[in-house]
Image (cartoon, rainbow, N blue to C red):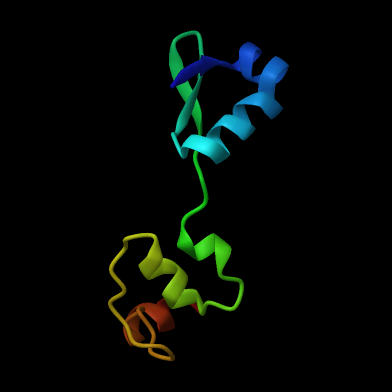
Length: 81
């Protein structure tokens, strides 16, 4: 569903309740351009105890390092010092 910023501002509680029931993403537009999206939380947001890498996996990303392992190469890390 696409709605204007003005409509969202006036009806935000109603829109949020509808999102809770349907799970449908809402695109908020200004002058016809999408400026924000409102969507239900993913599984990562509902699990407070999830480790950071588990939250990233829940977002659909691909983690290239194991927990405790750096994703930054040693030479890049030294360059950032």
